[in-house]
Length: 226
Image 1 (cartoon, rainbow, N blue to C red):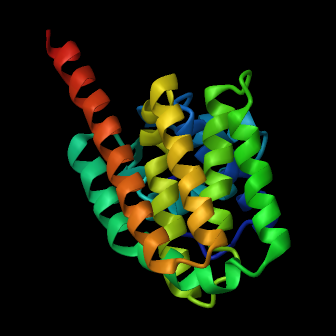
Image 2: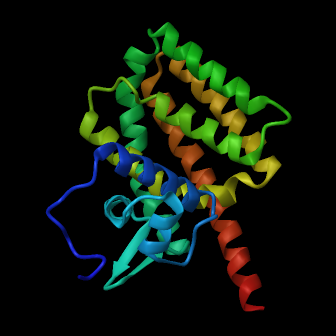
């Protein structure tokens, strides 16, 4: 039987969730790339091929891998892919945030949590990977209690797909300092209940992230051709 063919028997959700989470982390950190073999992945996780296959199908839906007959390949980073993902984020994420600000500005526990995460990102000894995780938590926590659940789901999916690109973005201390300044301004706008202002600043923040990441991708592409 083709190892990628659909089967009627489903793996336990908890096992699929675990494999999916670990594979996504490995792809996001760059430790897993190129062509993948389901049998090898299953052996590494000490599970059958079924939960691995289901986890990979989820990753395919998130844009992190692609299937081609018997082969599964981690999606390569490209300037075109980066621009597409940020076009989605720029169209949807500021709109989502603007709809959250009115309630979020009155939610003291949520604001305290945002401040705590931002303080963690200010720590001098934080690793790039630690900063990236804290950055993800900061942004996604702003949308935790939204009533726009369909919009939030799309935004979170785009975040998953963009994470491998953000590894490039965070590997420069100067960029992180600029991003933190924007985070502080963003939090102040949220605290004051300024939804339109927060949305406008978030759009600027995303644009700056796009430009910085795009610059690194283009530089790497030139270096590889030299």
